[in-house]
Image (cartoon, rainbow, N blue to C red; front, side, top):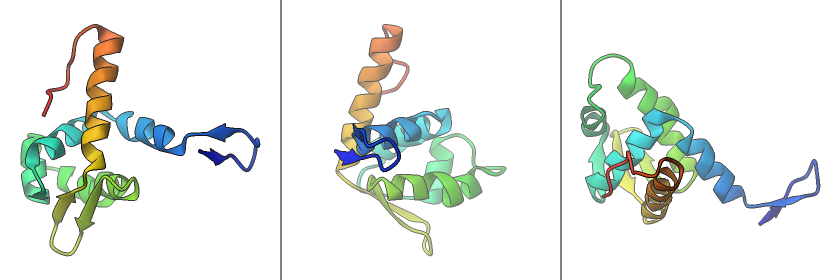
Length: 113
C-alpha cells in the first residue's frame, strides 16, 4: 500500500491501476487475447485477435493500450519490433476480471484462458 499525497489515506495502487485498465471494453478484450497468446505475440496478431486489423486499432494498441499494460508491468512491449512479451502478473489480472464479471452479472462474458 502507498499513501496518497493529497489525502494522506492509504490505498492499494495496484487495484486502482487494474480497475483503470479494465474500464475499457477494448482493453478487457486485449487482456483476454494476451492471456490466450502465450509468452510472446505480435501487434498484428493482437489486432487480428480483436477482429479489428483495419482502421486505427493497431495504432491505438501501439500508442495507448500496450503502454498502459507495460506501465502496469503486465507485459513488456518492444515497440521497435511490435512484439509483446506477456509477464506472469497478467494471469492474475485476467483471473480477477473473470471473477468480477461473474460476480457482477451472475455469468462470465469473458472467456477464461
